[in-house]
Image (cartoon, rainbow, N blue to C red; front, side, top):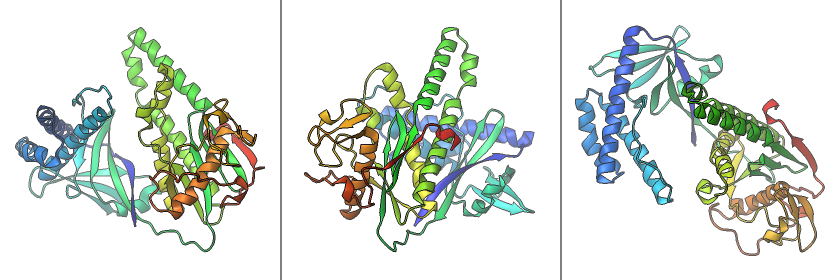
Length: 408
């Protein structure tokens, strides 16, 4: 089995000649991508074959090498398919246009990582046969062991005055060996709490209130800048919130995986939340919270960190997990009198709603693990007593509140 990760490495101060080549190639690459988008919009197509038949030869005439031309077609197809996918879910979006640089797509045959005297150098092909540009890389020491594992299509892009390369790392993973019963760990993802994790002997909450307050502060700040026409200040804020949220998701996922590794044969159970951004709507503030909810990124971080620790990750159907009683199995909306509280109208069981959802997710993980495809709806009448869960969790779990995941 193989898994692919991505590392971003900075190019070490390219010379003026090399910078000119990078800017010229990036501009030509963007023109080829825009031409592909024009064809896709005019013909209303997203077929890779049809776009390739038209765009590839134009990209070659613009001066792109064959590998760069192929990558420009891939970029145009990806953007076109994203647009048509959003149209299918009735979202009002405009057809994508290339306003700035799209970077430079590097096909697998267009570059090579060379190591000389303990340094790593990126060798990039040019439009001339057997002609290359050599870019020394600023590789952190923690990435040295990964560089020989680079395999696949890469990308050169610019941030400010600096140039970076995004490299795919292909890692061979081995399936975990089970020498006993599995421990199912349920993870409930949300906005009020980033994650609620149900372990056999405790439950850990990752409070999302500080993150919501910071997002609101940044949104209000951008709004004030726009009112006063301070577009320069708005540009300075570009990417700040995204980088901060990425760092937070890294820390939360690391904490979840590290705690899971303490139990025998752990299996992390996550909800399959595909399409939730399109299904849930509310006030303007609520919609902004949903749109900025980076749950998919958190899931991806958990998956690849768990793979490194040889921990399995499976998905379950999220329907009804927050309104089903884990003690008697009764499911109704009336069990949720408020966002944070759960009270079963049948057996009067009371607990935190996110905790209840994480327990039910762990139980659903057992059925998903035993019955195959995890995207199927659950069987009718499928219930489980909380005291007979497969991981031995009891109703009187210790509650561990992580109010500041940033410091974890």
